[in-house]
Every structure is written in C-alpha cells, then in structure tokens.
Length: 289
Picture 1: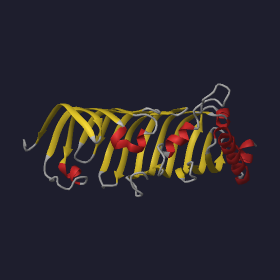
Picture 2: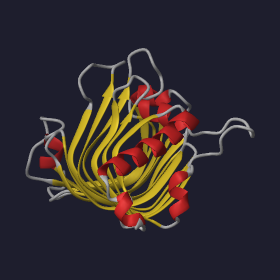
Picture 3: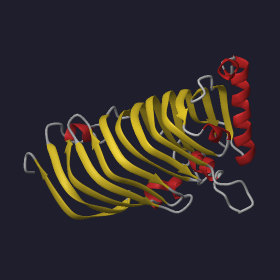
Picture 4: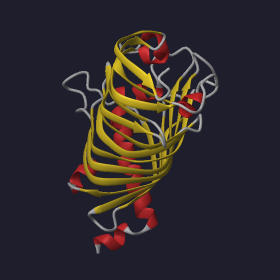
C-alpha cells in the first residue's frame, strides 16, 4: 500500500520538497529536487537535481540520480548512507567569482562545517560507489578571465568509498574517461582522492591517453583562499614515477612540440606552477635527444 502511495507524482514532489527544505533550512544551501521516488521502498530515484551556489548560479545539476538507501531513515537526516549511486546527464561548474577568494564549491561545502557544538551536526554522506555517465565539468576563475579555464566533457567513471564529512571529501576514483578542452582523450584515470580546506591529494594516480601514461603521487597544499590564485599560491609536491608522454599529446597544449617522439621520465616536482624545482629527474626520449 505504501509503495502505491509513494508512486503518485504529487507525493514524490512533496517528498522532494520536504527533504530539500530540511537540508536548506539547516545549512543555508540552495538544493532543488523535482521528484523523489521511493515507491520501491529500498530504492530511491531523484529527478532533476539542481544545486545552486551563493550567487544563485548552477554548481551541480543532474538529470537522474538512482540509488539504494542502506538505512531508510537516514534519508531524512543529515547523515546519508547509500549503496551504489548512478548519475546520468549532468554538469559541475566550479567558479571563483570576481573579487572573491573562495570558489563556489568551497563556499558550499563550508556550509556543512560545524563551528559550535550547539549548532547542527556535521553533514555526512557515504556511498559504496558512485557511477557517473555523461557529466560535463567547467572551471572558471573570473579574477583571471571571464572565459572557462578548463572544460571536460563526457565524463564517465567510478568513485568508490565516496565520503563527505563536513567539508572533507574523499573517494577512490577508477575507470574514469573524459575528453578535455584541448581534445586530449583520457582513456583511463584512477587515483585515491581526498579534499580538505588546506590540502588535496591524488595518490597512486594513473592517467592514460591512447599513447601516454603518467604514474604519480600528487599533493596540493594551500591556505583558505589560495585556490583562487592556483598557479602562484598552491604548493605542489609531485612524485612522478616511470611515466611516458607522446609529443602529439603535448602539442595540443604547446604548439612548438613535434609529434613523433615519446618522452620517458621520472622525478620529483616541488613548488608552485609558476615557480617550481625538479629533483632527481630521469629523462630520455625514444630518439635519445
């Protein structure tokens, strides 16, 4: 009987409004869900999910989100425990607005950070695996230029052991495929990812195109606000293990490179993008030049 009631469109719309109002009123967010389908009791489908940033622009949008809820009552709390989540047809827009230091994602996740014991508890979300299909990612920094800095399209991939605890995010990413804005097609990307207010880690990373393969551990250290001036303020510690890059991939970024050689290298990189040092470098090419 309950499943029949929950199958009505008006009930699904009302449930979606109730859940989002609860989260929005607790944390000052702007989250919209058109429909929340609980008709199968253990499974939940969210349709047309929209998360707006602090300027009321799109941060995240998803046409369809399907999952099973491991603990049914947790769906109506600030501690969500999901099984596998499937996301299809969406967009993620990461933007730093002109005159601001924090990007819109940082502003958003900071809303879930508890500052006083008497305030609402930290938001927590867990998923055994998130599978994404046909998701686009765009990066803007209006302090640098109005146009997009990075655009990734047609993202497919898996995010296992996904966790959000307050403003901290972590996941094991694997089998990720994407085409970036220079038309370099990444055919496989995997990493152990974590994000906090002061650090991002990409450990045991493998990035492969049709002809290139990078193996590395990369850590970004920064203070709040530094991400808005990424190239000058974010400190990088990267350990590149045995890696290979075909020049045809590099040529899409820097036109002066040739096309018909492969660079093999390993080494340590420390510093910012605009001011770094390379240590213990081992570099050679198939042409030995």
